[in-house]
Length: 514
Ligand SMILES: Nc1ncnc2c1ncn2[C@@H]1O[C@H](COP(=O)(O)OP(=O)(O)O)[C@@H](O)[C@H]1O
Ligand SMILES: Cc1ncc(COP(=O)(O)O)c(N)n1
Ligand SMILES: [Mg+2]
Image: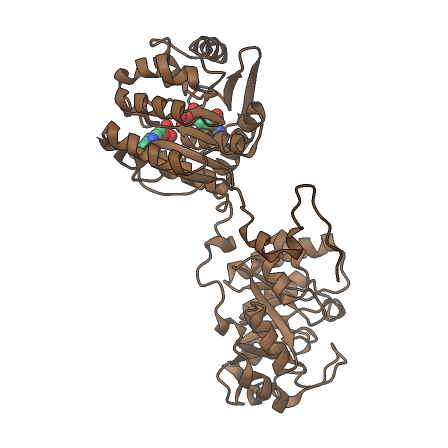
């Protein structure tokens, strides 16, 4: 019997107590966003949800207004009745544990007042106020009637307030703000209104090469500076920044570090999505999930694996290519130009850094021909160069772990000799199996399974199969004709690369099997 250690609180450890294990609560940091809906989903509630999700924080929402909005501007605003905003606040705050409240568009004085009442009734760890009044497009989202509520009630409760230049100016009675020193002066004056910290955002500061925000905590000023990303996609930066600050505070960060993290996040998100085109207006939304820098990235690929690409599967071998005086990249180029439908880089005696460099070059070549590139064995190289997937053998990383590491999008192939291995590959989440060696080869000295062995595996495999081992011009046709529908193609090494002209060999082989 395993020794059971009694914890100081008198409970047995989880491992030995399935009941405790099942009922142990898991807590996730929680931000409540009180804001308006943006139908274009670049700003407002939609930006807040995306920002919190990408920071791994739960976000509940109290909607204050519904806007008809796009990248051109705001075409309409429907303000919700303050009673209904109060009802939403009560629903969330009376039931859920909220760590931080973040406010955006608060379009009426009544809404500001019910919010303040609820904050007094349900105190939270921190209050982040983004005093949304004018959108980036210049449209008014909250009129001057809310100013009194901001100044007298909400700001004194805020842990941080994050006005942009126009909002800072309005809060201070329309003082002009044209420089960083104006921003510092404004931060100090806004601090006098009662919030514990102020961040005056300089996204719209004219003639500034950098995006500079001024942070003031009542004692010290910090100029937070990042290079300005050259993009039209800045719609929703303010909402996202405030949500991100709230998310970091909910996780337990200090204020300054939450603000710094949020600023870095904005910079990265803008950088990643600077070329994104959504809508025809002047201010586009950006991507909160930092996935768009390279539009070829797997997350945005459609039809990530088409089994028909297994038809002519070229597997590289540097010894052979060296023998014929060509680089791996030259060999891959010739193979894809000759019609190879998928390529696997199988480089056993190569330094990691060199492998990565070669993989990057080959990836470019393959992408330009819309041919997937897989890496043999090396999950790390696959991830580092964002190749399309990996091919693993029975003694490499288990396919189930490879799937966990690579995520759902990457292609995973597994070498299988037997029906049991084929079944396991399917259970583990592989996309295809490589079955062989069908015939004896120079590249592997293993037991061969012959055409009958290949058939046996194909008949039970739930995954598409590519045959491998000793396949070339003389026998490829016979393999393709064994009459099992999930045999999708042949994988070849020597028949392409241990030849003088890879291009010609590939073309000839393709003609035989298609
Ligand atoms: N082009 C840009 N490059 C980098 N950071 C930016 C850019 N535009 C805005 N920011 C940053 O985004 C955040 C939001 O600022 P801002 O656009 O001024 O607020 P708002 O969206 O409320 O008008 C700030 O941290 C600002 O410095
Ligand atoms: C519903 C709603 N809330 C806030 C903003 C401000 O965002 P931005 O200043 O980036 O236009 C907006 N445009 N719409
Ligand atoms: Mg902005």
